[in-house]
Amino acid sequence: MTKTTILKLLIVDDEDQARRQIRKYIELDFDAVEIVEAANGSEALESADRWRPNVIVSDINMPVMDGLELLRRVKKMIPKTQVIICTGREDHDAPIMALRAGASDYIMKPLNMEELSLAILRAKKQWETEDFLEKNAERLEKLVEKRTARLSAINKKLRAERAIKKELESQYRQSLKMQAIGVLAGGIAHDFNNILSAIIGYTDLTMDRLPEGSRERDNLGEVMKAGRRAKALVKQILTFSRQEDQEKKPVELYLIVKETLKLLRASVPSTIKMKEDIDPDSGSVLADATQMSQVVMNLCSNAEFAMREKGGELIVSLREVDLDNELAKNNPSLADRKLIKFSVTDKGCGIDPATMERIFDPFFTTKKAGDGTGLGLAAVHGIVTSHGGAITVKSKPGLGATFDVYLPKADKPAVDEIKKIFQACKGNERILFVDDERPLVRLGMEALGQFGYDVVGETSSVEALNRFRATPEKFDLVITDQTMPNIAGDELAREMIKIKNNIPVILCTGFSKTITPEKAKNIGIRDFILKPVLANELAVTVRKTLDLSAEKER
Image (cartoon, rainbow, N blue to C red; front, side):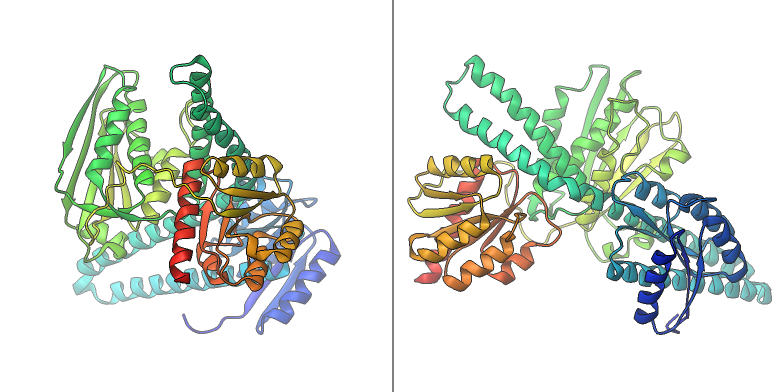
């Protein structure tokens, strides 16, 4: 498998210039490459049948036969040939359709040649992997024929290896789907979180100024609930795509399960009986408490929905378990770890085999319009995976279903996040608040102003830098958005730190692929927070950052 294979690349596009551009770049970027061109899907299919390429790069919109039809036919004819689809940014459904049809990747137009080259390299490696597995499977089968005395044992081993291969391929396809949807979701998350920041922030401020029990405060409470639901929806999207990392701390899982079940009981119909088998000594897990609560909520809500018409029992259990052989084969990362198993069982309608294959796919749902988004189980899968765990499903039509979540136990004692509340953090320091959205600047000034801070707001990153350059000694802290015109937040922070190397900077963003907490730390940024954020949460971060900065100066 380490032997280098020649890249046999078939380029399919009805535009001559586009094909020549790709050919020119790939010939420069790859040492061993053979390239064949085709002007449409029909011509490409003939070339593929005759030449057997290992990678195809195809436009999606072409005469005679489009890229999706070419993809479907190629995957039937030569399953291991990897197909990369090129599509326009305005066609949001095309990437999902392509991945469902078996594409190994997709690239948005106009093409970024470096991105395309990396996609081709990944596809080539995937082809080499599948070719290696295919050839070795044939070798093993011949070996079985020669050694008839060991036929039974070898057949058993071969079946097991094929099952593992199928599971790994399934996990790989699932990761590609998650990645594709994550790219699409990330594109809207930043703007949507900016909108939510204004809605939640101003509602929070106004509620604090209204008397308890007043109609106005109650009405705003409903607005806040809706805002929090929208915020949770964005978190679900980013969670199943694994583009949002949460801080993980040791937490007692049984407390999270207990607290979440209390919230659920009020909404569960009387025809459904809830039973608990929860071991309070099961131990703690290294996790984000909010995300663990989301796992419990989503799995129990699905179980309740399955029994909504006829009723039944909803059984929730939690205990420490040992790793069994089947789970160990499919999840080697859990080997030699103590595990906590969380299970949700319903006595509902069960799940058919076809649905089981797609049960964790994003946006896949068997519920009617308005009853489900298809994000719940995808989010659960993303959360469990990001916590180093595994999730399995056992079900038959008419016999209910059981979802088992396995999480590695934490080595450290648990931190009680469930009962923790934010404390008001007052101060009188001067803060420069920078965001290109004027409502968010006003919100930041008012939110921090009520804690005693002297806040100067700027909607232009250029003006903010000029103001800071003129009087850096007048500012104790800077809060800046990441995605802004002219100067991005990380670059603004870098320039300000050059001017005053001890200035603490907090980077605030709705969503950005270009900056991570690690990158921010390397620049010198002291903290990194995700929108939308409430006033008291922002105040806690500001106070913590200022206090840590003061300690360093001593």
